[in-house]
Image (tube, rainbow, N blue to C red):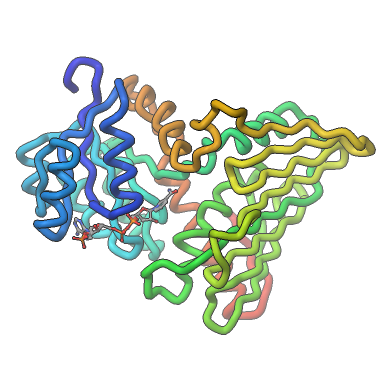
Length: 326
Ligand SMILES: NC(=O)c1ccc[n+]([C@@H]2O[C@H](COP(=O)([O-])OP(=O)(O)OC[C@H]3O[C@@H](n4cnc5c(N)ncnc54)[C@H](OP(=O)(O)O)[C@@H]3O)[C@@H](O)[C@H]2O)c1
């Protein structure tokens, strides 16, 4: 590390989220961007010039020359496995984008190889760090909802570029599966319905604590619609609603007609900004990394979301309820 700054290399030069990684690390006081890695030389050089860092089109070359403290992997959804394995085998700590991968055996291989090298191996489930979600977690921890009876999650918009039949479930609803367990505890079983193309899905869930849940995910909608994301936790003593991840948190005690609402104030651009959920996650991740502690959201959380995804696929393909033990 140089001084107190963690030197981070970003692998992936995507115009939206890869660039967001570069912005995040280059604008912090506790980290600095030391290199970017892309696939196309011209695009990589453009990104490197924008941030004033060296650009590489070969991960191994970058690792050998730059020796970053931490590698952030932000590659197309279906292209995570091979580069991640390479970085792990080279012995570098890493933060990877969701989904971990699409295949459970590949997930296990990555986790086993990283554990064998005692590597810091984090996944970016940044939705957990949205202000309304943190308030929801505080409400759950404080017990103000009472016994949880149901939870609902709805999220979706336009499709991306993945060819995988269950792309929406695995690469996008991993956030929902992670979130529901983060707030409600372990899922014990699942039952699924999907459209013919599997691009819209509805899943009935049961949690170990006896509550039930529903997850509606889609690539046949639009992120331009207001209320494209909604999360609801209903307990016997109160209800929490999170709208559009960062837009609004509402808590209403059962039987009361007056609610407590959080929404970002006039000058509070940071907490109304979805992209800043990544910065808020880094606020927790980087100190943990520097202190030699485990990641606040370890890659095993990505494996668990993937495991639930595969149980949901099994339920849909067999037309049965499927148990989902960890
Ligand atoms: N956590 C969140 O909230 C969030 C939000 C959005 C996206 N994401 C995740 O972020 C990841 C990337 O998304 P994106 O939208 O940036 O993807 P993208 O637009 O498809 O961009 C991927 C970039 O990676 C480059 N690339 C492809 N293969 C490569 C390789 N082997 N080595 C180096 N570079 C390679 C491509 O280079 P070329 O341009 O040269 O082809 C492209 O620039 C995905 O996993 C996605 O799920 C997460």
